[in-house]
Amino acid sequence: MTPTRETFGNIPLSSQLAFYALAAVAVGIFCWGVWRRWKLWQIGQPIGFRELITGNLLAVWKNFRPGAQRVALDAGAQQRVRGHGLGTVAHLSLYVGFMALFAGTTLLELDNILSHLSEAFKFHRGLYYVVYEYTLDYLGLAFLAGTLFFCWRRFRKPAALGHRASDWYVLLSFLAIGVTGYLVEALRILWSQPTGITAHCSPVGLWLAGQLGSYTVSEARSAHFAVWWIHAFLAFGFFASIPFTRLFHFVAGPMNIFLAQPGLGSLVPVTMEEVEKTERVGVNDIRHFSIQQLLSLDACMECGRCEEVCPATASGKPLSPKRVVQDLKGLMEETATGLAAGKKEFRALHEDTIKAETLWSCTACSACVNTCPVRIDQLGLIISMRRHLVAEGGLSGTAATALRRMQSNANPWGLPPAERANWLDGLATKS
Ligand code: HEM
Ligand code: SF4
Ligand code: SF4
Image 1 (cartoon, helix red, strand yellow):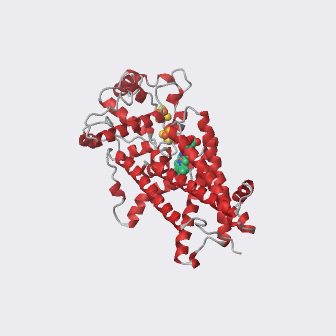
Image 2 (image 1 turned 30 degrees about the vertical axis):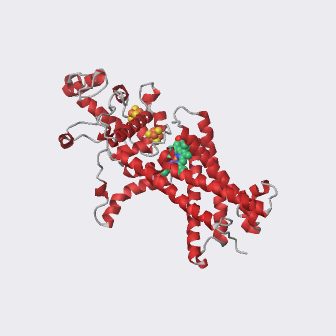
Image 3 (image 1 turned 90 degrees about the vertical axis):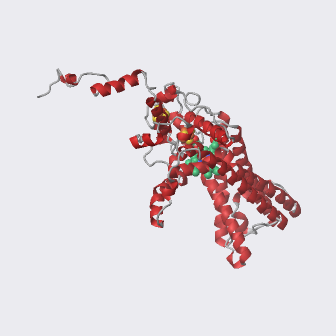
């Protein structure tokens, strides 16, 4: 007999219709959530996105190619997630498992639609079916293993990691989705009683079916129906909640990777044209950041990697690049909500949100920028704000003295040019 199974086996038509209605609601909530975040970013300065999509197809592709390559490597192949020990292994495991389950469910739905058109179009059978079931059964374990690691890490509460109550919702719902997925498979095996390779190509489900004890076919059918619904509710709940939890990095991360500057950490000079046009130097208000910079704040999943490599944080200075990103994100939300409610006065960016001593603590070493998995440019944010302080005459202390000496003596120590070669005195050099 050709190995295969019914897609909605044991699920009556009314439940199938309710399933699709619920799927539409989940997609609707997801889109609404993304749109709400999108509206927040719009308070920033335009980034000329239209220029990216003008011209013929070749021109558009030329504009898109660098960003698309970055997304493929950094997000798709998880290139920038690497180099963080067990955290990296766990994320790769969870990510590969999740993407495989997602692709598998999409293929299953495609097969369902095609087989409704004609039985001849059904491809979910034979060797394809065996490979599909086998692969997804094992990658489901990878998804669960990654999730279990992140649960263990949250129990330990490492200081560099951000903590919110919704993190537990995400991780526990992943665990529940994985476990109920296997239960649905085991109960299906119990009522449909497959034999040979059709049963053995689902090794985890088959093993679990053996552990569940003796069920009559009708008991297995009822339990299968109930757990199938629980599984569906959990999956839709998870999908709808993506824009409202830390999982939003899965959406905003690739978007920021696509739009980010290619040369991270390189400082963009301020031009006179820009100053004349904007009548300011640097950033004095959250709305002065670009739309891309505001979107980047939403891509942060508070992994703490930037904080771990920051020399200012390590030496006890009042600066954490992760905190700067999170504080700006808070101000963006507050300002955008206030604007929508017709408010005119907002919490100030400087001092009320980001202290001058925080900005002066940055050594501009770029370590944070180079380590961020989603290409957030923390240094660019800090320098933009610091430029405003300099323009306002806020530079004081040793930094101000060094700059004055650079201007008058071309060196930060204020030594006269005539003494420049003094260090050669006493050395065995030939004139
Ligand atoms: C789009 C590309 C993605 C990138 C660049 C990315 C990056 C990251 C990074 C760097 C972390 C922190 C891990 C660590 O510090 O060790 C993380 C955490 C996490 N990511 Fe992703 N991720 C991506 C996609 C996904 C996807 C598709 C999922 C699953 C739906 C996912 C789920 C998670 C979870 C559950 C955590 C752990 C959160 C916690 O600690 O509670 N990520 N991600
Ligand atoms: S800014 Fe980047 S490196 Fe820092 S916590 Fe956020 S995602 Fe992680
Ligand atoms: S650039 Fe500034 S914030 Fe980033 S790691 Fe270096 S000192 Fe820290």
